[in-house]
Image (cartoon, rainbow, N blue to C red; front, side):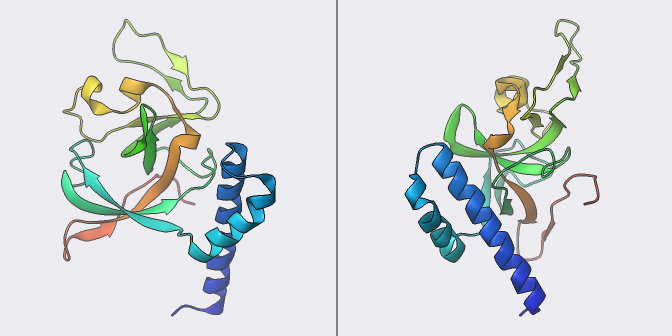
Length: 183
């Protein structure tokens, strides 16, 4: 059932996430200033901190099965370099089609220098508020990958959440290996 302290932390986290989501909705013009508190209240009561996502495609193979693996995603209302880290498996809005959600691994964050194996490509630094995401399947060409090799640096605001648990079957499941930092 959980201790009262656990429930208090969960409830406070829901309030913080609800405020962040409501402010984001206000900033993009989805809601008016007068509607912010109603939106927060609705999110606290009905909103979820975690949700399921079914893997489609082979981009994250061998980490995840190409079809049918379900991930538990933890919402990240305001992703920043303090909340996502290199090595994290994240769900993001496809920059080329925002209705589509992709699962990729963060390879670099703002301020890091990107160097290509190709001598033709110039090194560059990632701009503030951006990251570089890659699929885990190394056999997929950059054109087919639908990651930063094809669409470039990704705004952190496109990150929806972090994968925390994966299930292939009732007997094959476990935590997702994320960043190598201990937080």
